[in-house]
Length: 309
Image 1 (cartoon, one colour):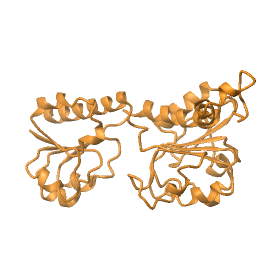
Image 2 (image 1 turned 90 degrees about the vertical axis):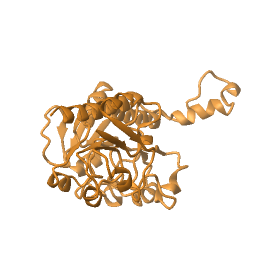
Image 3 (image 1 turned 90 degrees about the horizontal axis):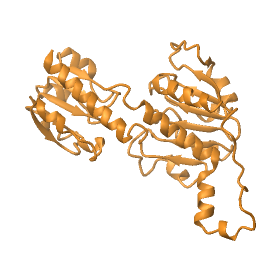
Image 4 (image 1 turned 135 degrees about the vertical axis):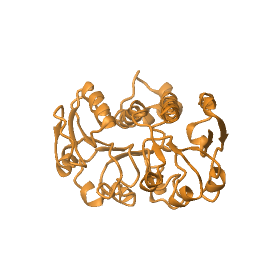
């Protein structure tokens, strides 16, 4: 088998791909732009891609037998056409649940504990000037007793709910599909969730129903001081409306994804990068070392199963 990895850089250079060598000849590209995709796959049997598009045109001009997505989402693949051409498409599910939940809590605790303020207070040399042993001028809160609203109670949302419950939070969730009937937590509609939550974390898919799910009009329902975390997909919160609502309400936004990645120079989010209530990270929630190793193991198993069928 000839295997081509189109965007190895997305897996991190601290990961070991050597186990894939047993399946055949491996050709590795750190990055691939769409103009080079066909040339790089022209005599390839198996392609491994994270974000590089495998379109109808690519499929028609190559002889692919297996498309391995080194991610969970397959929106970069023309899955229906691949099926029509009898090309298998394999993704890896569940590998990043722990990692995504971890960043969710990192962002929430950063805001609720005012870590940046207190760390900078010491770094700037203010503590040694203090007349008392402590400094609590920036009020911070207990996480316990807060109402945590979860949008999308899949594997990741449920993991977040369990951890939040351990912090003694009250958990409500909104199912964007209306197909989740988890009775361990209270289900509610979106309006009620926005009105009652101290913390909201988003863990749903981006689709026609969830695009701009949070927008200027319904974010006006949020409590002052509410924390909103999006570790799902950019576009679920309208990005033009975030700077707008921040001018009117005291809200906190922790964003790990934006609608176009990498973030564009003219993104409306760039005007709030220095806002003390905003933290934006470069799509890292999925990517702990352990998570990426689980992902590579998943790709390996997908190829192994395909070859052994």
